[in-house]
Length: 458
Image (cartoon, rainbow, N blue to C red; front, top):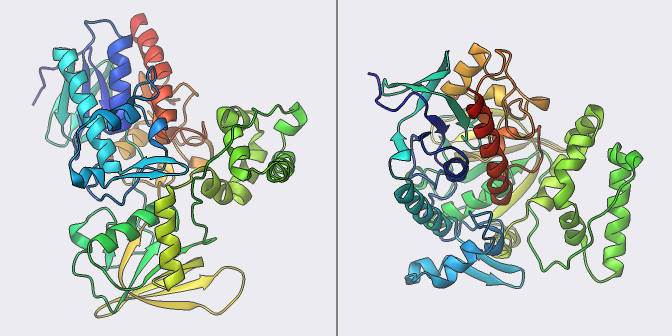
């Protein structure tokens, strides 16, 4: 069927935080006669998968003071926490620490939902929300025909891909595979069988919290190639933004040497490595885009896992929970590679080759949870991405980490100058800091301006 949505609408595909912030900024940047269509399949607009959880132990990885959705009001979320009347269950999701205040992700989802509803009410007919899945964008004169799972065909003038982290191929194929975000699927697990989590990053920490909240009392094993776990936040003194020579900027080896020397200096001053990492924060993308491709490849091959656990830190209460599990022996962290997965009658037999040397380790897993995070762009089974790749409207970006695009989000297409943009994790590789709330919030301002400038030419 054909929709009645005006053909000059701009479509935002994905209704999570990325889609919400882009919609807000497009309402500001576009003229009033340009309506906006937000398409979201599964979740309440604004929440997405990340903020739909009801588990009070699923904490934000950033302090509340850094989580405003409004680029002009940096303290908006912290103010909302202070001013909103919350019941006891909601209050349990607020953790005050020496490193700052950290809130449950579900509580942040409530803040985003309320913000979205205000935006929607103010926008009126300019903002339409469609609960459906986008399967394809077919190029037509003046834009695309957006085709959905329910059979809708909607003419649009352009589209913004705001789909968050794309699901990748299953790491360990097994009939005992479970979705770490499907709470119902993690109930009634055999407590005598270990649960295997593939990945030891932030998603692993959430998976452990989910298992415990669902009453699973058994042992958990988490495995990744290096066995690295995210570091906790701590009070951090402000450190001056560093200045680098052109020679240092062009060499990962020299940047690493600078970092080691700077961390040693910080320790001598009574601080630690966190102040050094945070001093790089405003210029990380500048450093990344300035590196030669060979140096970027060296970073990805040798340093990225170590950077990730130091840069993408976790809330202190979440870190303390994981440390306590490890100390009690209820959680084991393994560094190694999955070799084989064989399904038996009541469990899967998983063989792990430890990192370095050593005999293979066998795990009798009653469930396997994939917590490896985002996949390479071309590996996803997402039907829209598959169709866009087949049409030549998109192509993998640097190192295959995301979509090829300009730094302001304009998708680079072999079909020419298509009115297609991307935001958030899809820009990983083009940018390096593009997945956290402050990055997406601030990038949405420039993206909306770029969309408005392009559409005004048509």
